[in-house]
Image (cartoon, rainbow, N blue to C red):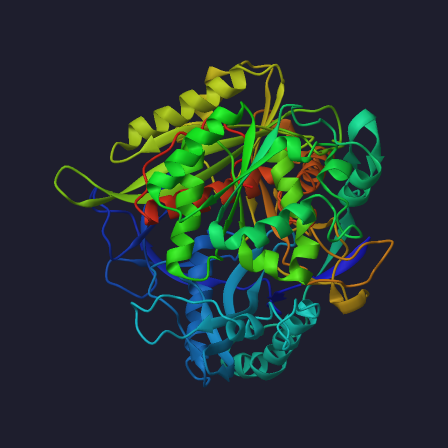
Length: 626
C-alpha cells in the first residue's frame, strides 16, 4: 500500500454545525425563492420543508450537523468561502450557473488568460471529511463572445500540456503541483483569517493500491505485456480477409507523396520503426492488391465516381486518401465530408494528411499507427486483452446532441444515443443506435429501454456491464431494462469520467507521478484510477501523463455487489485492460475502448452536424471511426 496526496484540503474541525431556517410548505406549489429538502416532522414522518438560508418571518431556526443534508451544508460552506474570498485580491467567479460552487483565484497573469486555482466545498465520503477540492486551471481570455476559439502553442504551454520548447510536458505533475503549492502557501492563510473553521494547509493522503498490468493476447494464444513488441513477434489475433485490397486516392500533384506513403507502409522507408504491413500484420501489400487514382480534386462528382470504382474492385477494399491537414476550416470540412461520404456507403476509409507524409520524422513514428488503423478497418483483429475472469459483454454508451428545427422553425435539441459493443477482452463487435429523441422524451426513453434490452436478450453472456460517461436514469431506464431481461443476468452499470476533478501526487515517485494502475477509493462506490503513469519496471517519464479517471459503480442488479470490494476491483481491472484494446494506435489515449470509441463517434457526429451533412446509419459497421 502506498499513499497518494490528493487535491483536497480538509477543514480542521469536522464537528461543526450550520444554521438554516425552515417551515413546512403552506401550499402544494414549489416556490423559486426557497430550496426544498426532506426532514422528519414531529410525527417522525419525512416531509418536504421550505428552506431559507436567511432569517425570515414564519421560518424557524434549525441546526444541521455536517453529515446530514450534504446539499444544504455544501451551499452554506460555499457562502462562508465566498464571503472570505471577496476580501482577498484576485479572487473571482466564472459564469452564473445556479449550482456553481466554484471560486477562482488568479495566481499568475498571462497575455492570453489567467493561470488560476479553482476551489469548491466538497464532502469526501470515503473519509467522512468536509473540505475544499481545488486544482490548477488556465482560463483563456476571449476578446469577444463570438471569437472562434483557437488552441495554440501559447495556451497549451500555459496549461502545462506542452513544455516551453513545444514538446510534451514530461513535468506535468510537477508543473501542477508548483501552482497548487503556491496557492496553499499564499492564499489559504489569508482565507483562514476570515474563516471560523480553518482549512488545513496539508494535502490529504489516501491509501492507494495497484491493479495488475495489462496482458495482450495475439494469434495462437501467445501473450505479451506490450502491444507493439507482441505484434512484432507474434501473428495478429485474427487475420484480415485474404481478398483485401487497398486503393490510394490523391490529387495529381501529390503523386510523389502517395508513393512515399506506400513505401512507408511497405516497410521500405523506416524499417527500424515499422517493418511493413506484410511483416507486422501478415497482410498482402504487394502491387497485386494495390490500385490508385490521381484525381483533379475532391469534388462530389469525383468522390462518387471513386466510390463506384472501389465497389467494382472487390468486396473488401480500404481507400487510403491523401489530403491537406485540418488546420484550415476548408480542409477540416473536407476531412469530415470524406469520412461521412465513405461511411455512408459502408466503406471504412483511411485519411492521411500530406503534411504528415512530408515530415520524415513524424511519418517514421506514425506509420505503425496508420498501419494498425488500416488493418482494423480491413476487418483484421490485431490483439485482444486477457480478462480477469471469463469474457462477458460490455455495452459502451455514448451520446451526442444536435440542434434541429421543428415544424414551427424553432431550434430544438436532439439526442442521439448509441452503443459500442465489445467484450471484456476488448474485441470490437458492433455499433448500434439506441435512441433518437427530438421533442418526445417518453418515446426517447422507450427506445433506450427496448434497444438495450434487445442487446442483452440477444447475447449468450449472462454477465453484462454497461459503461457510460454520464449517469443513466435508474428509474426511467435501468430499472425498466432489468424487468425486460432474465433474472439470471448479472448487470452492472459504471460511470467512467475522464473529465473529473480529482488529481493526486505520489511523493515517493519520480516527478510525483503515481504508477500506472494505481487506484484509490473516494466514495462508497466511487474510485479514482490512473490508467497511465510510471511503469513498475521502468520508472522513467517519457511523456506527459494525464489525469486519473473517476469510475463510479452506479448500479448492480444484485445489491450484494455494492459491498463487495473484490468484485468491484475485478471490474476496475477489466476497465484497465480495455484501455489496452484501443486499435487507434499503439500508444493511443488511455481510456477504456468502451468509452473512447464512443467519444470518437460523438466527435464525428458533431462535425457531421456542424457541416450540415446528412444523417448516416452507423449500425453494424466496421470501426470506421479509428
